[in-house]
Amino acid sequence: MTDNNNNNSAISSSHPKTVLTYGTFDLFHIGHLKMLQRLKAMGDKLIVAVSTDEFNALKGKRSVYSYEERAAIIAALSCVDLVIPEQSWEQKAQDIQQYQVDIFGIGSDWKGKFDELADLCQVVYLDRTPSISTTEVKRALSNLDSDKIKQIKDGLDSVLSIVKAIE
Ligand code: CTP
Image (tube, rainbow, N blue to C red; front, side, top):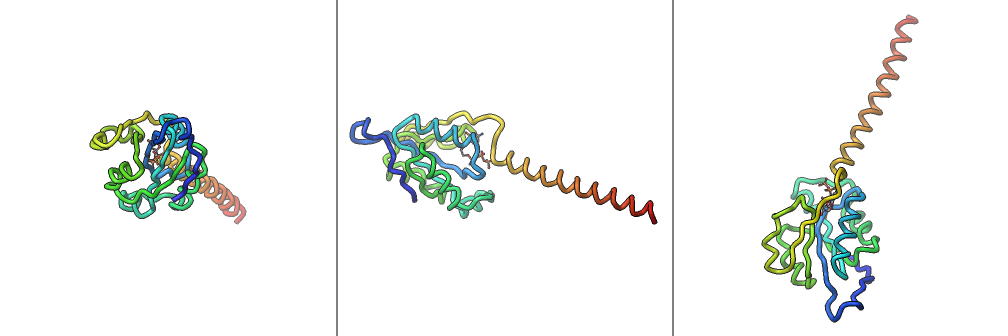
């Protein structure tokens, strides 16, 4: 768990308006950054629950970066005040109570999925940044790999045909 201790709660009365979000945040990209900045702008303190590798495995996901690496990247952001591990689907209600959360916020890809938390705090679904996702980045990288492989193969084929022509 990492605490940046940089919240601007001094401007609010006793209790900083606290925003909580969850996610894997693998291969950190601009969509992640914009989401976290918008969430922070909604309150004084932003808590990010980063999915652990074990929880990702449960969700059928495998990240490129480990939990420790992903959590370190998120904790280093100036808009993030605290990083906690996300280890289960069920922990949200307890986290909201423990950290006195005012707003639970997450991308619109989860729209309607966490409405039951509205009994505990405000629930908001924010529009995603278009045309970027970790899945897309992974796909682009794997396409790049197969392009490279094809280039090498084409090169080898032409060498082979030259050798055959000489024989
Ligand atoms: N997010 C966003 N805009 C994007 C991508 C993600 O606002 N273009 C938000 C998600 O809605 C979520 C948070 O960032 O609230 C973390 O999302 P995560 O699932 O870790 O990122 P994705 O890029 O969506 O990853 P994947 O493709 O693996 O689902």
